[in-house]
Amino acid sequence: MSQEPSSQIIATIVENKPGVLFKVTNMIRRRGHNIDSISVGALEGGKLARMTLVIRGDEWAVEQIVKNLYKLVETVKVTRLNPKQSVLRELALIKVHVKDSKARSDLIHFSRIYRARVVDVTADSMVIEITGEPRKIDAFLDLIKEYGVKEMARTGITALLRGSEAIKV
Image (cartoon, rainbow, N blue to C red; front, side, top):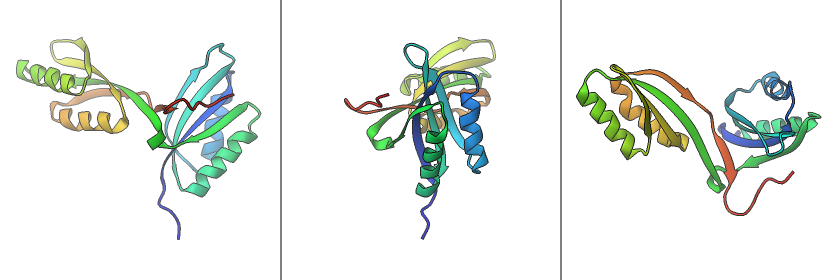
């Protein structure tokens, strides 16, 4: 019996040089998988970068991706993260239509409840910044959708292991 595909989080340390992101994403594409989310940032010193990938797949498929990541010369370390043992965060910038002062007041109120910040205001729109777990952002979006989301940008998940455990290079 096959297991239902679920989101899997893979943290990888790679060399920070041109073309590495392409090699990683192309390898995953060639195996017929989609990347639900990816975030990349240089580590201290700048010679290495950390990629956090969210991929939907069953256990076997994700294991194959991990094995293939290790085959890339630029890969230093690959770790699968358990979401229950990790701190997950995502950032979203959301531009919302504001038709009147009541809508503006409601959106400011909702933003406070969700610990979001209003970062830009014009006569007919607001930009709200929200950080948290993806389900928190999804819940906020669900709450404000009736006001009309004009535009949105989400960073994708970034994650670290909880506690004193760390991904060592």
